[in-house]
Image 1 (tube, rainbow, N blue to C red):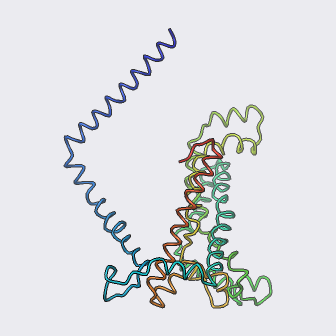
Image 2 (cartoon, rainbow, N blue to C red):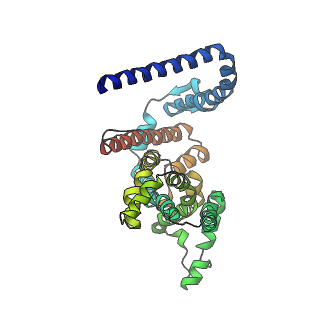
Length: 317
C-alpha cells in the first residue's frame, strides 16, 4: 500500500509539473510580443558586441592589410601559429603566464574562503561590519592606482626600504615580480571575493552548528564538518571558473608593473600581444597569439571541470 501510494503521489507531482509548464508556455505564446520587446535589446547587444567581433579571428589566418580589409587580405593559413610555436621566446612567455596564473590561483584562491570562515566567527555585528569595510575597500581602487602605490611603496626611497634600512629597487628584480604581482592581487581582491562565501555561510544550517556545539565539537571541527560543506559547491564552481581563466591574466596590471629590468619574468602573452599587435602593427601574428591563448583557456576549463566531476562522484556543473 505504501509503495502504490508513493507511486500515485509521484504521478500526481509529475502531472502537476507538466500542467505548470503548459500554463507557462501558453502564457508565453499569448504574450510573445512582450518577450520579444524585452529580449531584443539584450540579444542585439550580445550579437553586435560578442558574436560579430568573432569574425575578426580570421585575421589570425590572413596577411592582414588595412586597405584590403579582412576578407580581401591574403590567406596564410596556420603560418602565424607555426611562427609563434617555433619562436625561441614561446616557452618563456607561456611559462611566465602559467606561473603567474598558477601561483596566483594556488596562493590567492584559499584566502577569500579563510576570510569568510574567520568573519563567520565574529559574533558582534558592529565589529563584523567594520572589518568587512576594511577588507572590501581595496577592491574599489583602480588597478593603475594600485600599481602606482606598489611602485611608490617598493621604490629605493619607499617605506619598505626605509623600514629595512636598504635601498633595493624591487621593481627591477625579475625574481621579485611574481611575488609583488600575486601579493598585491590578494590584498586587492580577497576581501571582495569572500562576499559570496560569507553569504553562503550566513544561510547555512544553524541547527547543525548548535548540534555540533552540544556534541562537544571545537571551532576547527565545526568549520570542517559543518561550515565547509555548506560552501562546498560554491568553492568548486569558483575554482573551475578561475582555473578556466588561468591564461587570462589581467593585461593592465602586468603592463603597469613591467619595467625593462624585470621583463624576463613580467613579459606574458597578453603584454606580448599588445606589443606585437598595437606597437609593432603585426595584427595577424598578434591575433594568432591571442587565439592560441583563448584555446588553451577553453581546454583548461573543460579539463578542470572533468577532473572535479571525477573527484565529486561524477557530479560536474
